[in-house]
Image (cartoon, rainbow over all chains, first blue to last red; front, side):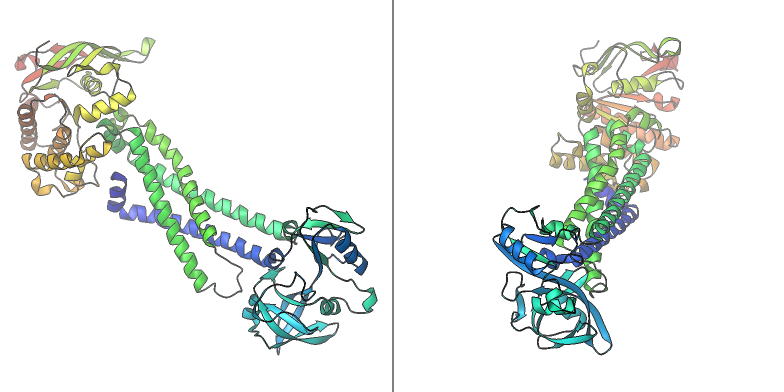
Length: 363
Length: 235
């Protein structure tokens, strides 16, 4: 195959462009991984809640932070929202001093023990007593917490100790590792003062029923995805990441396009001779596209390998929110390939238009 | 027309441009070339000989006239048929370096098999045969860019013969060679043309090379001056 022989014999030239494609692909994979990591940290715990919808206070503008529901509203939602199941949930961010002078912020989620909002426990046992706490794996990795440890959670200016009874695998809430406590305990952590005057929950998790958009006295129902999309900063963050990805793909398309355009210009007389001795335009275009394909595939494979290596080493800690999935890497590889082929379209036209007579006169 | 003619040109003309800018590059050329005949085409630069060669090679369409190659009127061909004609019926030997530089001598021959319509195994055998015949067996695995000028031109002749064409078109085959090498290349070409009963047109500026052909045709201002065996008159 002419295209592959040229690549073998002009190793330096093609290795250089493959290297550039690999770097551009690596950049796109990293940006994609960053987007995915940020997306996960924004609220995988919310997305993995075992329900379909959330009922917010209608003056909260679909913000979990601002939403506060009274007992009466929770009962109203449970009775009138039209869902098959409903259970209140509370959310508050709290600083947890997990070791002397060592603290981290956790997303404290209040749930009713035995309700469908309680996540599956992957180690230990579910919530039972008012001082039990479930911690996510991400918290466990961050703080080194294990089942049986005691964590102090702030209640006003004081703190209350909770015993870690289980580990869950739900991820993050608002970029903070999620921990789960009984709803009553959450009420104490989130709101001090007269227990009769404090909110009963932040939102109500609903399961079943076609009830998106339903409203009641001071509450409204949105889908779980809409709730996620309305997490503060998520939309802007994902738009920024996507803009960076598209920019990377554009640069990739331009790099591949310009490279093949330049080498096509360098080979005009050679291509003309090949046409003169019987090569069809289709054959020559096919050979050019085969080179683009090989360069893109090798470039993205190198980039994926490098990204996975980095993830396993430098990025193995939780400090940088970056995540790779096979799907994301394959999507990026296919995107770079398509971008490369689009970029090479310029050269394809050039090759198809080569007149053997003109080309031969350039010898 | 002779009974053994492979190439027949009938009133072939080619002009470029329109109105006052019109240039008549080739004017009403009628010519036959027989099987096993090497014809040299001589004339000053701009006389139209390369244009004639390009038309016979299916690279240019004539403005008027017919070009019949082995009974096939190529002026009626569309783009695809012209590509197939160049691939299967004609062999080209171009001026100067016309090899694919990153391929070996043998690969430069085998490249014509990639264009389709050929038995690859048969082509491999033919390539080895031609390389041996033209004294290139020793350099068959050398890159074209590492070959000498004479070796490159002999590889070009071998490549032109690869698909067993009926007609070989040669443009200034000795332009970049010294006399000794040039003579060897033309003799090798002549031997192949005679031995394989092909017809060949060789465009050249080199009088000594032109005289080695079976017939010499002079061209001036797009017209055929002589089409006979009187070489001295033609030159």
